[in-house]
Each structure stands twice: as C-alpha cells, then as structure tokens.
Image (cartoon, rainbow, N blue to C red):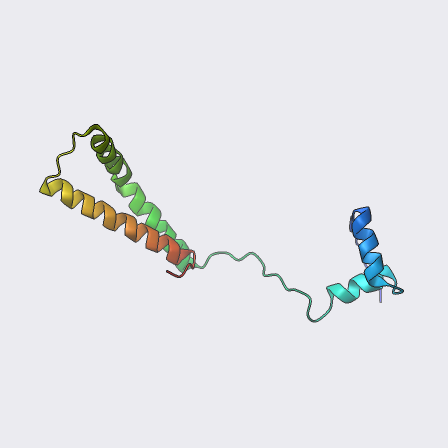
Amino acid sequence: MSRLAPFSLRLTPKERSQLEAQAGAMPLATYIKSVVFAAEAPKYRKRRKPPVAEQQLLAEVLVRLGQTRQSNNLNQIAKHLNQGTLIVDPELEEDLNRAVAEVAWIRAAIMEALGVKQ
C-alpha cells in the first residue's frame, strides 16, 4: 500500500505536551490516528445549501420587503408621534394594522425559512 504525503498539524508547545501525555507510550502519529478514526469521533456535517423551498420563501420575503413602504411609513408615524402631531383616523389605523400584519408575516416567514420553531 502506498502512503500519501505527510499531514502537518501546528500545535503550541502546551498542546504538544498535552498530546504527548495523552498518547503515553504510544507513538504520537498512532495515537492521533486512533483518536481521529475512532468510531465515536465527532462527525461534522458539511455546510449544506439551503433547500429550494427555503430559498423560495426567503426570496418571497425580500420581494415583499421591496414592494412595501412599511419601514418608511412606520418611520414617518414615529416622527409624528414624537412631535405630537399625529392624528389617528380610520385610514391611519388601517395602515398601522396592515404594517403590523406585514411585519408579523415577515418575521414568521424568516423564522420558518431558518428552521426556527415558534
């Protein structure tokens, strides 16, 4: 069996001492291989590409954000509230309710796309 090129691992002197102490009388390379290739060694998942459904949901969120002027409208409302010049009529109340619903939908959609349970 032909061997591949050596693998290099940089350690601090403290890490090297700890590794040698853990290896005991076992050769260091043998010890490292036994730990790395042990059945109970941690397995790390590959970075996964988000599923198409998640990408579509996030795209829809971005589209809806781009189509609305909710952030600008909410900023104007806050400005008038701070100035004391806000008159809440039925049209404004409807706009506020729509903005709240839109923000709630966006929050829920982002959390769903990220796989966060609510």
